[in-house]
Amino acid sequence: MEKGKILLALTGIHPQRWHELLSAEREVVLEPNGANDPSITYAVVWKQKPNLLKSLPNLRAIFSIGAGVDHVFADPGLPDVPIVKIVADNLTQHMVEYVAWRVLDHHRQAMLYRVQQQKKIWHEPPQRVAGDISVGIMGLGSLGRAAASALLSLGFAVNGWSRSERPMKGVSTYSGESGLIPFLNATDILVVLLPLTPQTQGIVNYGLLKELRKRNGLGGAVLINAGRGRLQKDADILRALEDGTLKEASLDVFEVEPLPKTSPLWSHPKVFVTPHAAATSDPAHLVPIMLRQMAAYERGEKLENLVDREAGY
Image (cartoon, rainbow, N blue to C red):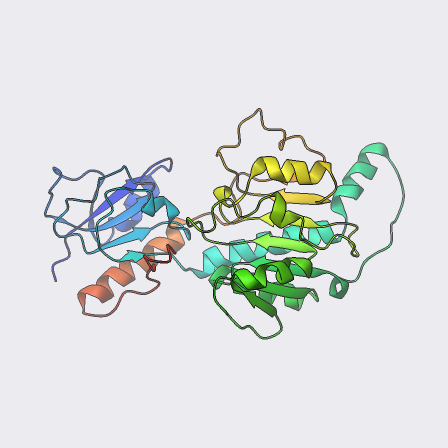
């Protein structure tokens, strides 16, 4: 196989660093030389322009620079070539840190302490035991399983839910539609790490949140979403916070991003907001993985971490 060129097609992300690192081993272009450019063999993308890839005759594979691939499938002219999702230790570590940070923050009542600090109140509430708190992870892919391992090491009881059965030592696992309600009923802190597909869009709604366990050592259910913004209904989360269905929430993703300045989530006293920053794609760590895969593919080896087009992730 000839090397060919890489098409770097990023929207909303500055391409310079990605271009520099990819160019160390390959010729990189930011636009095809016409709709039927035969020189392009790989595309590295983030929210590529619609129909940009559909007519490239020698395109061998598409690489997403993020762990999620819903942005790739948003292209109506997506060609029928392999799609590779990024699985990297660096990306996984960032997500594990975020999940552990937010779970511990809610568990150790940080919101209460921040209010007390503002009001100069010296009061120590009862300190809870991690083993009394059940953390439920929706999505037991590589990120979910790594987060579950970290939480187990901290002493939390951990549940996991996925579309199909995915057993994991030390974790109470549930699967499919029949397992969703029992999973939620046994969960105090819900961590959402699902991929975005037509089946999961809007899944974090008021009806789902109502099923979380409220009578617990936390004094109420907690939501943490570090998956995709369109998994949730922002208005339903606000409703759940207002009527006590949820005690608190940590949200890294939102239905519309950037989160509009008019959103009440910005200033809600029970909400912690981060700007889709749980696990940032670092080109210094991700580009070498992509280049290794391209070289291996050209030697006749199989691509790793391929997306299941039918499942959407």
